[in-house]
Length: 301
Image (tube, rainbow, N blue to C red):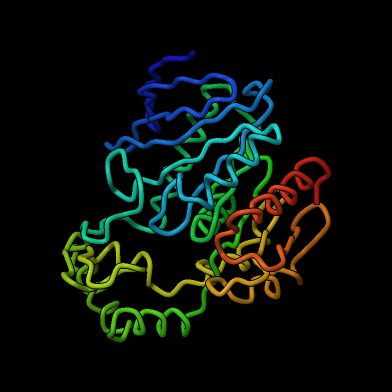
């Protein structure tokens, strides 16, 4: 059993309890918020056997079926795991983000939180780290690896990572929220240029949350056109071996295998397509994902 307090700029450990074959919630302090995650030690494994750090997708959480099923399968195969909850600006957040809560979070807030957890793992002598992200979490993980290379990260797994194009983003916003994206984005940008990124845009909608209240800065962070929302465009910038796992029947992330296939390179970028799986890789498809990850970790790309 471990219990400690680590004081530092990036993170402060509030409490950690770890026993073999047991998943325990761990908490750290970051930017005035409590972050939480679930740390699981596989049977007979020590911290220096490495750890798979898992980042969930849009407005989601670390105990959703996609994450928890994969986590369990990886642990059964002898891999230590840390499945984190991104705070999304909420203290000690659990479960799906409540759409009725004011949205202040920003897309790239995740990078700072990933960094805080890596600092915590380093203090606890865990490593090396395989950083894994699902959906939007895949984009955030790729952005982190490309923009903030970290000595703790040995490999990357991007599980149905987000893709993007400006036309699709605009059409998707208008279909879900009933108004053109351009006008709303211009309004948000005007507030930000006036130093009012905190301004609340009532009943605007964000991501899956129709009619949600959102700050101008939060809205712009998710909708300002930028090619780096398209994960395949980032892959060449990542310095560690990277595996992209695509769902063969995905309707959420379309065209991912076709975008990644030309970029594959032995020892650098690999692609595994899970036939018939949808975006969430539920049930036995978690085993297929784990097969691809296990092969990737043991034999490389």
